[in-house]
Image 1 (cartoon, rainbow, N blue to C red):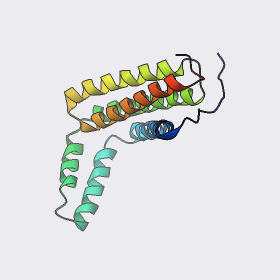
Image 2 (spheres, helix red, strand yellow):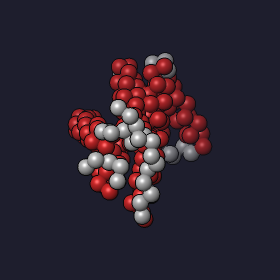
Image 3 (cartoon, rainbow, N blue to C red):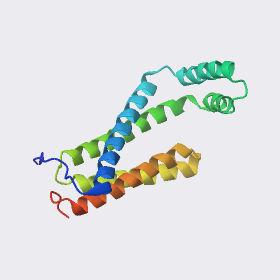
Image 4 (cartoon, one colour):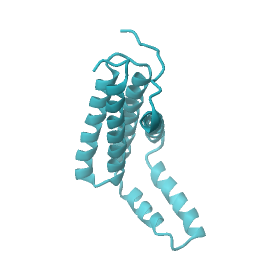
Amino acid sequence: MTAELQPLPRGPGAIASLYRLGLLSKASVGLLQFCAGLGLWLAPADSLVRLVSGISQARLLQSPLHFLMPALNTWALALPAQTNAFYALYLMGHGALSFGVITAIFLRLRHAYPVAMAVLLGLVLYQLAEYLHTRDTALLFLSGIDLIVISLISVERFFSPHSSH
């Protein structure tokens, strides 16, 4: 399988710009997720609790009425040790998949568009199922980004002269 190393099409107007911005942001978020997951995986088990505690203490010294820090500290203390491993693997997996499919689109690999949409849709379904279980609003945010990228990929796929419909 060979990659067609042609540049992304320079379509007219806002859709082309949004498409490029969406791909770039999704690839960036994927890299950040992977790095955060790797950091969480390599860090000692209580490092998240110590980090949040240190931030809370420093923040409370500046503003004793800050409402977010006590809630964040309570959340970090309530996390079981195995949660770190889950979030580390989740972040690394989601980041690697996202970055991989976006890279395939940039390289114009033959089946990049449908594979990217399928992978991102699978991630959205998984994130929504996890949201129903955990009520973690970050999963809704990630799902929203994934859905925007899926819609931009489908529009670009439809209008791209280099993709087979």
